[in-house]
Image 1 (cartoon, one colour):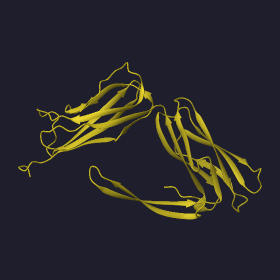
Image 2: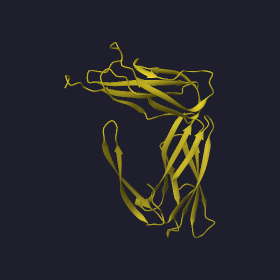
Image 3: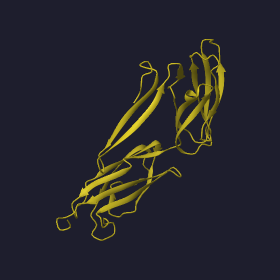
Image 4: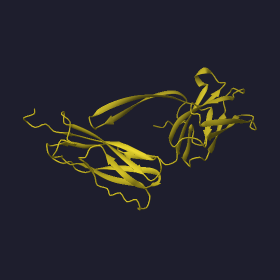
Amino acid sequence: MRLRGDMFDGQRNATITVVIDQPNRAEIHLNVRGEIRADLRITPNSNFLDFGNVTPEKGQSRTLTVTYSGPNTQWRIVDVRCENEFISADITPDFSNISQRTFKVNVSLDKLAPHGTIREHLFLITNDTASRREIPIAIRATVGTVLRVSPPTIFLGALPPGEPSPKKPAILTGTMPFRIMKIECDNPAIEIAWEVDANAAPRDRYMLPISYQNPVQEEGAPRDDGTMLATVRITTDIPGLVSEFYVTMSVQKTVDEE
């Protein structure tokens, strides 16, 4: 949800309703509060700073321009805070325009930042009134190659007793191309229709068809309550880059069981 700054100024409240349909239908209500300030402009990208994909062991920096055009001629950014030790910022004032208070904020991501996705907030501390003292800046970065699985849990459905499941796809994507070197699952009844080829060209997206084959023996069979949960582990050709996701299903009860 985006609020246009030219529509109104001041505090605003809104409610967002999130509806999910699996494994059970449910609604979640999120209360959102925010403030639109006509006296403050942050460029580029408002109060969001995205470093994008960052090469490991190479630092990155981005610059924001914060301009205050309100009535307080003594308005200043006096400090900057962030809980992430790998993010820092320097503040440089620019008062060349006497009708505005402008500050350059140079935000740096340290070259020692660990691999993975960084989602943080940087807070610019001003000498404004208490309710407007902090200006939050959302920081996003992806260091190295990061794997994502969609959906994070594969639900194969509610199956009739003794029947295999249809194939459902798990979409594996990376921020950089990679090879799949090994696929492991802790349930032998889970079948993943993919042949590992260590010589294949690296890709940044894979679709893995997954199904459940009703086992003849107990190993891999559903639990007493008819449910099954398995863990799939993907190992890639990039050292330390692995991904895990879950596969779940249930077996429908027969008339006798009911």
